Length: 212
Image 1: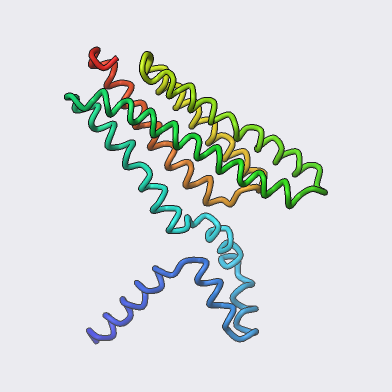
Image 2: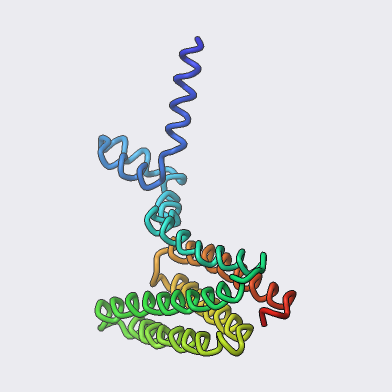
């Protein structure tokens, strides 16, 4: 009886690890009558929506790996010491680089959309707006680096404004079906943590007047 309970528990654990995308893929290899019965249920109809929200592992790990410099420089600023000024400047420089990267990502997505939708006026207009907005983060990043030396507070504020604006474009793109759902979900998580780091650095500078 103990073996039976262990086996049934193991099966339940294995089932819980199956993602919606795997369920859909496995059903494709089932007999036709089985597929018809399974896919007619309301629960199955929601699986594609749930699967679309799943963040791909490479994007998840690389995205959160990119947070390491933000967290490290924020910690160095909060704890103070001789490395704090260098950490602040490094954070502004890295944040400016990330801001340019995000603008470049929008440029790439919009360029692909422009080439695929030349005959759809509405979609073409949306992609034109997005590719126009994609160049703004580079100018904000340039201003942040220029202000990093004399006015680090303004540089951090400019970065927070730019990152918030890029995320707003991500949400706008998602609501119009331009980007996949997981993109907006991942970008929301990363943007929140980055903004928290930048805000913490800014508050640490207010606490320690020698860092201003």
